[in-house]
Image (cartoon, rainbow, N blue to C red; front, side, top):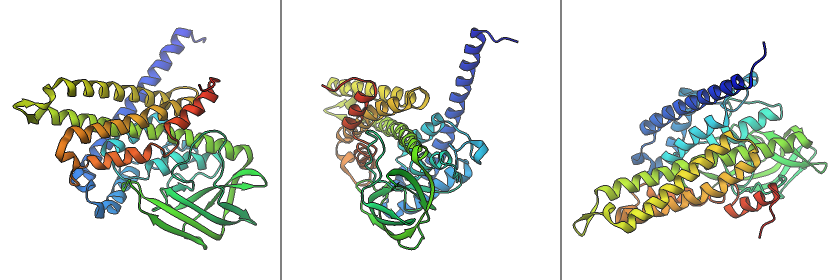
Length: 369
């Protein structure tokens, strides 16, 4: 029986609607969990962040069951889509919650599956600095050397290493990129916590002193897996930034609707109306860009489009939030400062907007001015 073009288009549309509905339901489940487990009253207590981090990830991985979300089901994972991951990341950004979801579930889970070493239930960490820019072919950290399967050197400011079960290290082997893995408890591995501006995403300096590793892939397989992993992470980070910006916008609007000055509600002042209207347009545009990155073709192009826009919108939204909240926005007890700090750190986490626009110029064959 031959399927007509109209029937094929209808089937694709139905499948897309079903996938979107599943992602929406997943986002709602994560939002409810975060409202219960990671309220703002706990978020502002820095001494309780490690326990909060553990509680959030336990709920994501075991209660909601998102461990191995992006690992194919024939490799022991859930076979989820990047749209699913983006939905979860948006809610984590909205709550500014500490979690290894981006660094482990999105970045490392499918990467290990792509190189034939799936570990859907493990907390994994990609050992690259948390300012890695996908501006072309991936280049391993210069400070690392591999001799006779023994790793030497150090990497500064790595995200996601604090609670990792496995470290995933890109190295050079015979002049080509290779993927090596090892445990944080392996001989010669040293982890030192770093004081980061964003306390909700801990950073770690890692040092390797003749640490034995296992090479799981090399050559084109390793290079392609790393490139895909970074593009996926860029899209998920963009979705997180959209969630962050959405919270800032909603919090600001709620404040100006009830706060009064000079006998009038703040929201009645035309200057504030205009600023919030512009911010709403920015956040809506960023939302569309992040969704396009999660669902569209040309993943490398759309990843850089999303990052070049969403990272700047998140910073702008956080700055406007703190300014329009007035005095309360400057207090340590209000979570607004945490959103600004995360937005500022994420601005360059996987490449600055300028780096992504430069990358885009090459990808679409449009020489920069």
